Image (cartoon, rainbow, N blue to C red; front, side, top):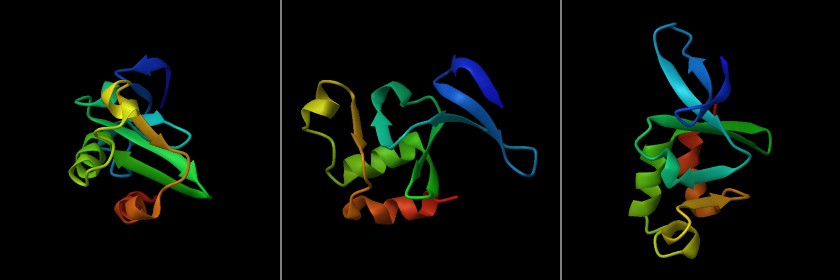
Length: 100
């Protein structure tokens, strides 16, 4: 269900085929982690090279920070976000489980 305005950071609400689970989804043009989505129980969806990815923002954020990525960069430390126009090879293995 598309939302008129970003509601709690979401562009739309997705419903699982079982009709019981609903998730808030933010649509992006690339792999994105942003502190403004932290703690909002939000999923990020984006398309890259014909594949759609949908991932739980906070889980992937923690995984990438634990790998030593983002922290220490101006983009993350000062601006609160980090994104990749293409999925780097060292992150691709983490992203494969989020392909739909």
